Length: 284
Length: 241
Image (tube, rainbow over all chains, first blue to last red; front, top):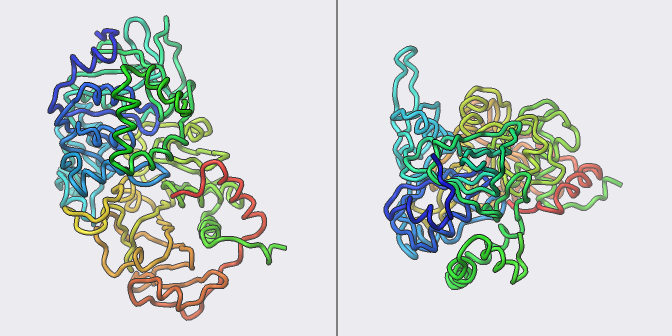
């Protein structure tokens, strides 16, 4: 059963250095507040898994939390590069970063296989390109038709972290809008943390919504605005201005460190983070 | 009036790429220039074009060009929103998509694409975003449309990394002209040229000895209506790729 605890307690109790951790949310509902808490607690040697490592992993990599990244598309969507990730890969700063990369279809199959507790996912993919030689994919033969298919090892996470719109007081969670691979992430994880915009007395079922029952979650933490600069459908919009600004902030090591010190390390939680951004004219 | 309209090379690239989409096509849309062209098609001659984004939004009808493939406006205007594993397994792999609209950092003469790395994989000069949906988009749709600016650095003799297979590439629209695969060899040849561009300029912007079709089609200049629709899409979020 999920306990409703502070995010600081949830991260402190459930995430260990060296863990395989997935923070998921496909453009929408990205758990930035949880990422910031990992940075505040000085997490180290994490293997970070995510289909689209965008700003949330750029920050974790730049802060030195990661040893390895498993991913399928690493960029600042619509803007350009992730400069902290590139600095780690191209120059080993602040630490070298091992990469394991897939296609989206391969990653999606690996999440689904993880949720199903199968050893691998199957797809028609990885044909006639060089990805297969740089990742862990094998060819298998269909026992019924003889067709050759790609097999990707299932994802399995020590900790899965997602952000959702609502939880009820028993810790049942609902998210809606673009729901990405969040359900698969939760079901493929040993331990699960869900941050939410708010706790309500009763969940009102939403079209297309996903409900995660309390008993598949370990900790629920209230983090209003916790997806910023990503968005929470029905609560606030994507801060596209911030995504563009991140290009300048992240381009330079010193500017990045100053930003991180001021808005993450010098703040104690998501509320202070937002106050800190507002104070320099960058609000949600 | 339309004959004297002024436009940029990026604008005619977007307009000419958009014209390739037909009303009713189901199109898997990549971020950046492809998203701009696909949305322009829907805003002009192909209102029934179904835009599918890898975030799981099927039949998205954004008024403004989204910055990402998962902006809220895509979900709000979509016919259906599905999970990402469902998108790739059922809809894309299931063969339900007609056209894949892709960009890339490098292309070779066979339409193979690189979006992974410039330089050596293990010691890259530039680490690019990576494959994303491209490999399985390119192997699952009927036709692949590619958009990228034509320079000797992007149109290369040899890719630094082969991210995506070019077998199903049907057309490449650039800021200078249009390339299509020859029937017999599959090699990309110049088949169209934008107004005011000469063939030597295209050759100089291509890193391999470029084949040129015997009769080059000159791209009709963008109409006022096309330019107005394009510019209406762009002001909030557009212009980046």
